Image 1 (cartoon, helix red, strand yellow):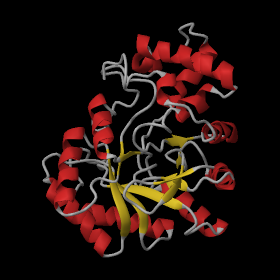
Image 2 (cartoon, rainbow, N blue to C red):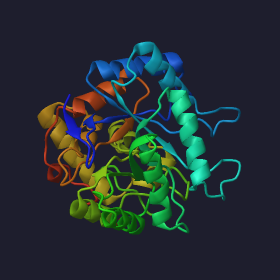
Image 3 (cartoon, rainbow, N blue to C red):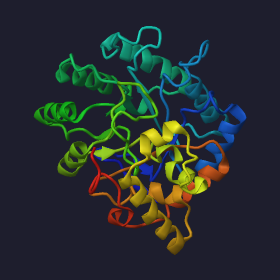
Length: 328
């Protein structure tokens, strides 16, 4: 396993981050433990979760954090892996009310720390933005939590580029290094306008403008949905016959992605790696740090993700919508 020191932190994280949104939802505790064990045996040490994961299921709490907290205790891995969690997601009971405020952020963090068995969170993401709130107020809340020893580092998930620019400026005016990392939706496959498979309007898709901002600032990207739900692998299985699910065709069927698919097939023939592994390897040699979050539902999918960590190729070989041909 190869590691990178995450931008503006002292955290040495594995090349990929294990996503756990399915823990407690699609995957039970036994299967989740199996995946976590295999991930750390292979050298993985960066785990992503969120206080809201599973709360979309009626009668469920923060199941992903609960499973990870139990695994950390039983496996003896507490303090040996880096856990990033998120707070300030809107409530499913009242989605119109912003929770980007001191009280709700502290409430989410308190629950996450109790569940994960931590006094201080390794990395803390704000999961949603409130564009009505001054960035200075948001930074105040996060810096107070740092001073209190509740979080080591923080970043922003589902924040638009204009807001990231303001946050970065605010931090630098306070003599800080700037935004450490951002987690928005990015994969090698560009999303068709209005076609996102997740209809949540508060999700922020990566853009060419954000790509340029990362290049200028050096802020790390820790993208979610980093394999586009396995679009290229599913396209391979479908043989381009049009048998993809309609939601996936609506999201990803376009000329740019089909050209990228042909390039991936060529790289697969040359290297022997799966399309899934190659689509993750796309992130590793960007002009800025990119550590993709990838969720898996079985050990075979995990093997593809781990295989990706051994691939070193320049992004230009993959094509893709960010640097050429896309409309995003």
